[in-house]
Length: 281
Image 1 (tube, rainbow, N blue to C red):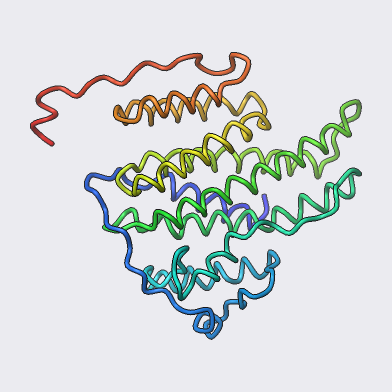
Image 2: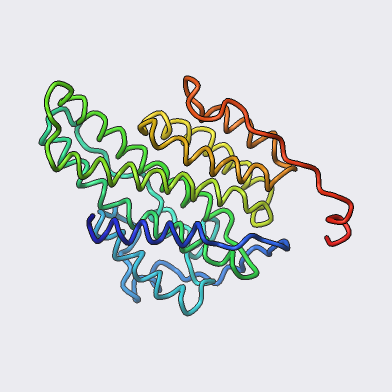
């Protein structure tokens, strides 16, 4: 397992460990910097595409900046930092269609370089959920790009596997397959947990996240081996039971994520809170 993948998985595990939210949070104030001010701290300027080294470098600097003051993170709808945030979540650079084993290996290695900083970026905007404010717009976008890069990696892995249907897969492919599948499964679980943080989103942004999950998570599940489905669906079931108000939305997502009868065909409905539970609230 590469060092970058270990960092990426560690970030997701921390994300999964976020405590449940008891009270509504407030939208974070925008104290972000301008592109020039970020550049003084070492970020690349946003007026040209960033490669994976640029992205890793930018996220590393933002991690240090957020440790001192998370309100200085770039914001999606900010006049000061909107261009910087747009570069952080920009689509990955296009590459020629990979058809040979060598092309696929190179493309998988290239995309893997983007996976860790994209996961770390999502964690940056998720960490404040443990406090008293949130970055809902930025967290939705960061979650979307983390899911997307994992989908692209799985598609490439499965394409490479198809070239070795009648022969043993090379060692590099077996290694990458294991890492990408594990990372994608954790990314899905993290995205579902973020969606469960109902009080951390304005309605429009939670709806946006729901749309992203309905589009990307079933596509990811279709690319994952069946052995990885059960744990993800069990995680989803647990979140459904904790969110009676959103049960219908969760059920719709669950149905989209279940393929050819894999996983539980239907989950138990959440029980209504007792009167005693209402009094405690």
